[in-house]
Image (tube, rainbow, N blue to C red; front, top):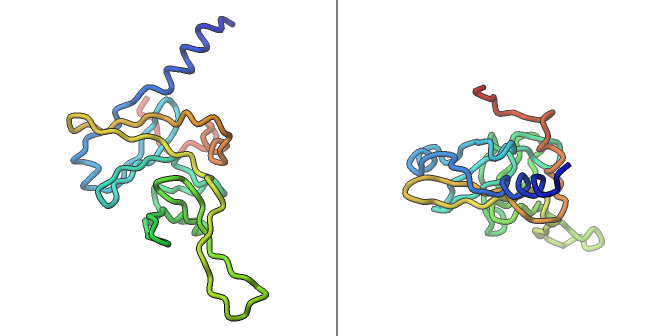
Length: 156
């Protein structure tokens, strides 16, 4: 295999892809798209755009069907299957924790770290573009980004 061709293919998947019009996503507040064979969901919430892998890292739940709620001052998508809370901005999984040795303790919000792969959204001349994450770490959602778990029907 020609390593130069492989590098070109690898770089190509990190080019921006137009996924729709700004007016459309502002109206619907979310949309799904396939970006270089990876399914993503794009949210428009509180004047900002966010994109992440479409399936929840935990069990592959359809995040595009979840509700957006604020927890601890952070906007999160709530997975409709198991109610996992994932921040739109960072992909962190939030949960409430309590000290079991302190009966008067109040639950506090904690992070399990980045679990959901987040992608970059840009707007140019009314068009919405998504660029896949180049973060080198293995993310839990990478497992669900395979052909077996596709949810968006292809037009071909």
